[in-house]
Image (tube, rainbow, N blue to C red; front, side, top):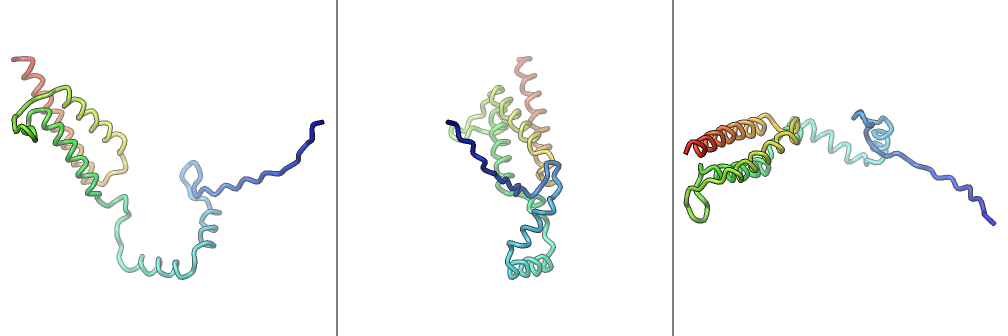
Length: 143
């Protein structure tokens, strides 16, 4: 009653890199077979035109704006900047602590992926915010 099927399944690994990050030789050969000759000539002439840094080495203004937004939010919670609507200087140490924790998590998760200036911007801002938090919390305790 039971029929045996003898189907062969072929699995082709088309990943370009091994688990350790090294490039597979087969993948680069497959790519060169699939890329038209006109494209390879264009790429070669473009690479000779100007040596530009890799995309990961270029600053990302959107990322810097994102950091600046988080930093200004933390500064607002610390009472270092006026509230955007009321214009009053208020302090919320719990909100400031949360924003500092978010920035620290972002710092840890992006380690090794930032340009030198992005890393310096984040490190300096985080150090200044942490110092301001310590000062604000100690001032609140002594009051």
